[in-house]
Image (tube, rainbow, N blue to C red; front, side, top):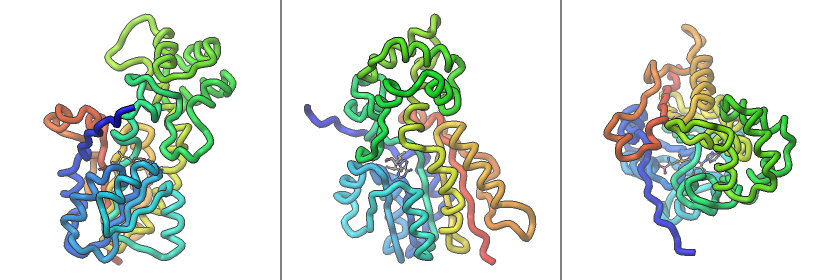
Length: 293
Ligand SMILES: C[S@@+](CC[C@H](N)C(=O)[O-])C[C@H]1O[C@@H](n2cnc3c(N)ncnc32)[C@H](O)[C@@H]1O
């Protein structure tokens, strides 16, 4: 099969650079380096950083990162395990970025099974050495468990009906087959494809995305040097809620505050960026700085 060309625009790049304000020599940790778009721009500004580490759980992304950044440390790991280890080793960074979710590498490659627009296998693993796939959930989990997953991770209003359709139509082997089954639950078309929520829910479950974020956020704050900045970009309300809550708790009150918020409200993409990159539409950027004392 011919290789698909991956088009990549790092989301909210200008805004990330404005809030992180990288300076020459500062250390940098990218927890979701992906195709290295943000990392490239940040590393240009830090020039010779004291320390730089790029992390991604996807082996294919790591392979591309290694080609692009020859002299930088690159690690294939999920960011929870990596943050735990870095905290244990007493590491600290001036700049930390977590640009959550999936990359164009996932959506644009049919074989990865993330997109219902491109027929592919029901996979959705960011790290393909993991055991659980979307196909396993769709074809082997019981109906109630699937309904709960669709409700909790997809905010699917017809979670029970969609789960029932899935179970009746098993076995389901491909993304397009699943999309059709989900769409058949809906009589009327809306602006977003009815399978969007189901695909989001499956992806979150397969990659354990929310637990990864919730458990990592306090570690990300610990990993900041005094005066260091952390930026997190989320792509749906379930992620953003976790980020907002963790930052609110750490910003606390008066002398107890560990961090200060660099923007009161989340920053979203401007119309020009959305026109070029529709995925930017749902992006929300929050950033904090660690208080020096
Ligand atoms: C939105 S993309 C990042 C794009 C990147 N900022 C760039 O400019 O190319 C998200 C990346 O995070 C990775 N990822 C998602 N969750 C992860 C996790 N829990 N641990 C490590 N990497 C993760 C994905 O594999 C994907 O490559």
